[in-house]
Image (tube, rainbow, N blue to C red; front, side, top):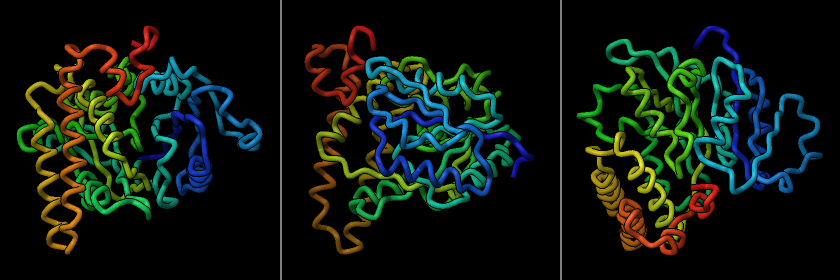
Length: 315
């Protein structure tokens, strides 16, 4: 555990629901106290002031939907905090227990293999009860039971996985965050990995803290998988300084093979066609996203899950 430090939480929100309410309640019951919960709410009309009026440590800032940006909006949220540690979360990531903040902070006490200080600590994501088996296995692949510390030395062994980090739930040292310039101000996706790459290259370490856990999963349709991976590839195409020479395809193939093997071994071989279909949607979206600059804008808008990003104001 770190010495006593101040902690704020920043959460971008759009159309808050009961899951978000549960997230807020569980943040209030953490063993390590949270200071300010900074809400970056998209569209004032969707925020129900009366629902949260009794929460003294809630700061709410409103942005227009066309102005929302994965990196820029989070940077704005961070600018309202003076805490030592800033935890970024998404509105659908619910703390699995009361120890989330405490265990995230514990990750900062670790060091890289060459004594590199830790810039950020990201949490393990557990599947929901209704999570489909394939997605459940994908979660286990990306968020295993064992934690780790990643540094520049791991690039040869882990490749792009070295930069893997997730703002679904990730704690950052604010002084390093400011020094590194925060998140990329304009990106359709992947602001967390782009920042992580810069931190790794600057000589910091990233910690995956498996004991810090949030409940977060999706049962995406093939169309949603396609669009999500299209946007993922757009972010990679826009940042060759990070992703060139570290292709994602190999990691994806490894995950598909491992998932197929487990399905066969556990008697769920009948789900392999669904695995192939979903993986095909992901791959097609990824390949098109990599080539988005040569596509007509009408097609880009059909492929993306973030149409506002491509507006005159957003782009």
